[in-house]
Length: 182
Ligand code: 5GP
Image 1 (cartoon, rainbow, N blue to C red):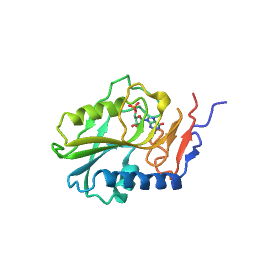
Image 2 (cartoon, rainbow, N blue to C red):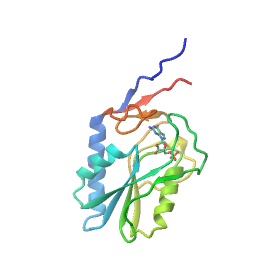
Image 3 (cartoon, rainbow, N blue to C red):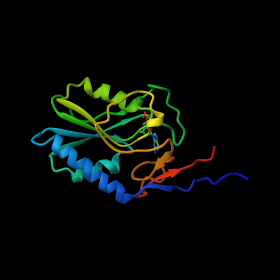
Image 4 (tube, rainbow, N blue to C red):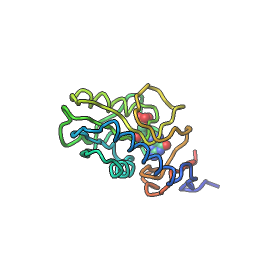
């Protein structure tokens, strides 16, 4: 007998805990950028879109929003070779001289963030920092600076709060774990 086509997600981090942590991150970011009038939040599509929307609405510091998209894993399978990250969609407006805060869903091996940090640093921003919703320390292959972090999690596949498994489960309010059949 074969396993279920769609694994049942099990809650890992509740919506209430996420909301409380996003409040704390926004407060830290407000302090860091107090008085700055050219802050740009760059959301990494697609997984960060809900996190970015919540974080942005909790900030009091003025900021603009950009999006960037890179190639990532295909569905639930890891198909990326180390360092093999491709730009799918670039930001629309220049960031030269602006304060950039990169907003990512997950730091897994770290290659995606390392690539994006190199790409954006080369464009001459006034500063470049990174905010990530979750990080999997056990999976780290490259050291990447993460200035604002929601949660460290174990080596599991997470969905919900914008994160998908084969484009499913993005709208679950909690961050949940799925155990896809091998
Ligand atoms: P990295 O380059 O750090 O290995 O991979 C980062 C990207 O892999 C994330 O932005 C995300 O798109 C994807 N990813 C890694 N782990 C997970 C996971 O547990 N769930 C989901 N939905 N995406 C993941």
